[in-house]
Image (cartoon, rainbow, N blue to C red; front, side, top):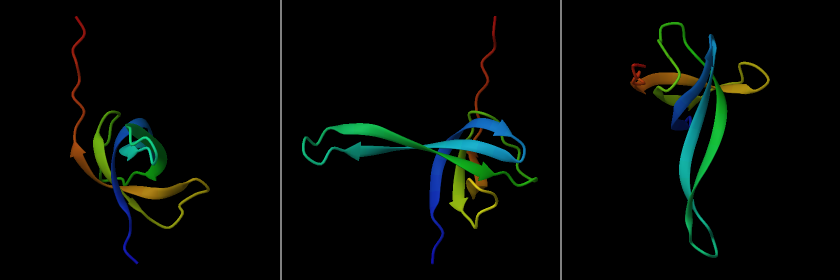
Length: 86
């Protein structure tokens, strides 16, 4: 069976765990209004990846690592941009 993959944004990071928010567009079955739906996944972070809050990452389903963690980060798609404070 193929492993599921999703693309999301890192919203919290404490090595070796990151919380990733995955957003998707849903259309209401009766009224057909499109709205945003999001889910959060606890993911395992491999030691060779440099991840920070705000990064866009690809996650992949794996066997359960702990009670609530069954996803792992495969790659970092885009780094977060840091804004300077003046």
